[in-house]
Length: 107
Image (cartoon, rainbow, N blue to C red; front, side, top):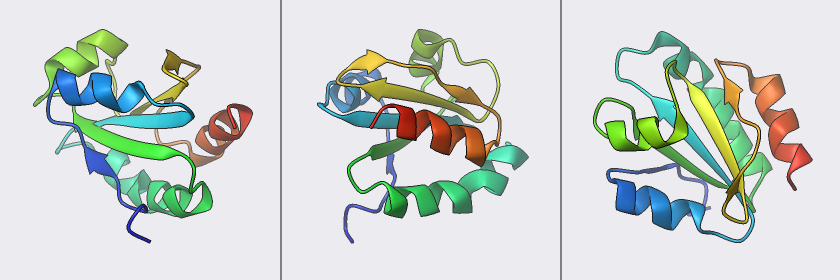
């Protein structure tokens, strides 16, 4: 179960490396003060187990503003979904049902 961790991206270089992956990648833009991010965290952790082939990453929009800017993130949490390196439709807000639907649509 070592794969069921959510890695934190701490630089734009790490972000670029993360999304250049064959398959589905989910990036979650968060902030330390974001209550919705904390609320959805257990659901996201479940999805990590439910979708073993999907890579999950998180980044702090204040620590890595360049990633947030690149993805046009203005509210948290924002889930950006990539498939084979191409950005797909994302999900804004703590909406686990929509996020599951968006992930499933790209599998």
